[in-house]
Length: 328
Image (cartoon, rainbow, N blue to C red; front, side, top):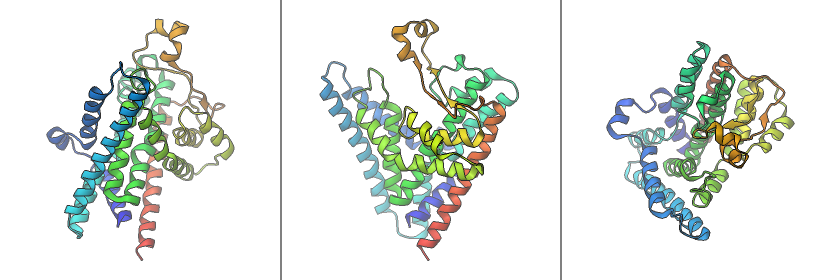
């Protein structure tokens, strides 16, 4: 039943998303998870503690958040009747933890002003989905940021939660979303979270190993162009993340553009960047993906969105076929 649950949840989210009226009334499950993480971070993450204690308390935070989310989801599945209405309710709840529609909307909000030549508006839109300094980005920088976010979040926000829903039902997708939200909030290499978020970051790396590579495969197949496995593998391994380089590299090759590269993050002043002592904290000197290709432009972001839609259509079709085959 989990395969059909995942397919139904994905279909609901793709068609409806999370309506603004509902968000204004009750917010969103990810916001609730984030509030729990923030509360534990404020209470347990103390700079005066020893390194070992901070790592252990961070691990306790991770276990608590994942445990609470999984337990609530499991309790809901036990309370719902094992009937079509019960499955429909479960699918509706699971759909809130998939982000295919919202990801498309956010990236389209970057592509449209870019194509229209309104780079300032595109910078404001891209600042909603990436952490780098938008004022330091030209058209190519904004385009790279949007495409990298589209590729990485196609894995983290769509393929991975759908996969965990297919394997483990509502508790599975809830556990995955808790882990992914933990990583996004405390899994940073900053002074505050390097120790406290270590377990969360490592756990997120583990659970995304398969989804990232599956997303890359789907992007390659949906792209319909020849992608060289060896350069893709080399680019992915050179990436700062053990997982994000796979979908980003696949997106770069499918669109014949280069992605990643050095970037400055928000809050880092030009003076700080000029200071070699602060350079490492201000600028991420990332390697290029598909380095020999040209920089992307706004039209390439639109091409990336079309590739994203084809990729999700392919993934959805494969999931539906698998569900039918399993239940024949």
